[in-house]
Length: 359
Image (cartoon, rainbow, N blue to C red):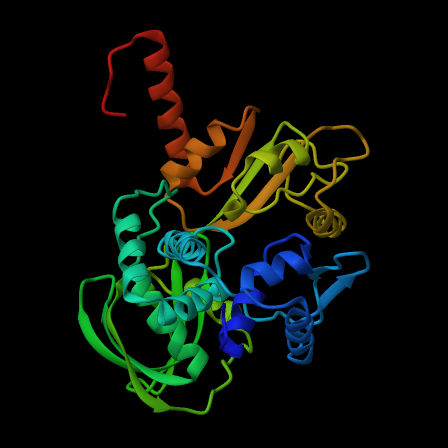
């Protein structure tokens, strides 16, 4: 029997968070109390904002339903470990769909995990190898959680940083946001030493340290951290991102379903855009509306076109395009055209039993 009311309420809440209806008698038996005490505890949970729904009947049932706000979750050991392992695996590789909110959730969870569960999480992660795409560098989850905590707590962050040319430096920053491009994580922050905004690749950050010094958040020049990152990458002479322009001899729905989302969504070729001439102003308008809807041309041409910016290696992009199952034509960049030609020649030689060459 649980005599401590707060502990009993947590135990009751944990039971109710299982998606099922609990008869009052079963809850009373699990908690070792009377049905009357269960009813009182249910009323206490409701007073705390938990939407507990009761059903009529000889044994009356209770179910926790969706409310206006997200109530705190109560997890058992196995649930906590499973969630932490999943968040760590995604966060460490900037996987598609895993954004700053996921990293914040991981930071909160790992902060309260008992030592025995943290050990289980680390052991499980060390024993697994994720299959990732492109050259997105892996990142220690601890690095991301430290950064996310300083972003959420508006706390200055100190770290070592390695530039592309290998130059090492120490930075003191006011971290603003973590941004995932689907291939890499970036930190957008105000660099106190440079007295200006900067973007940092998180896989090049070492020994992040939360200083404990609070700061009043500044607004990035562009208003949005994602937009600041985009502009920062575009104006850097050593930016690895590049634009691609590919035409597919297949409907947009077919191509979209097979392309990785980090390459974008291919818009339908505008009416009259057969082949690859330069677009007129009228065609440009049609192109813009096609990008928004990505619908198949009403003329039944069954073609679509993709324009996107990516940081994936051209070898990876060429390979993904070649496995879509339809004909395609690359307009730009020239590096991707050359890479696709080399890949095609290599595959042709392999299929024909020819002698492997340097290409």
